[in-house]
Image (cartoon, rainbow, N blue to C red; front, side):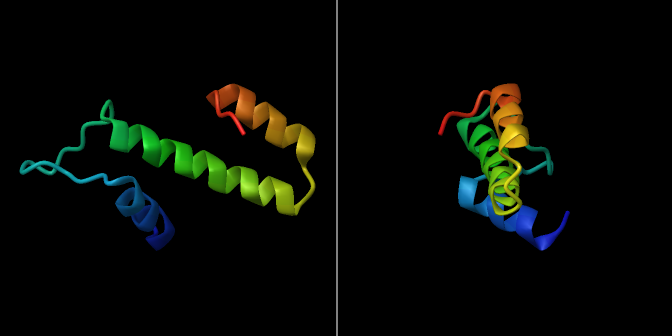
Length: 64
């Protein structure tokens, strides 16, 4: 896991339990996934890949 992913996980409030297992159905985990998608959309915006951005948003159910 790279440092950016760790930072997003921290930002979302994701922590592992005492067994080192995460619980992906928790709101923090859902927020983590949303943050990753939004980072991808930011990259698409920088490269003016608007059609791709729309497809990503639709695929993941992310609203503006």
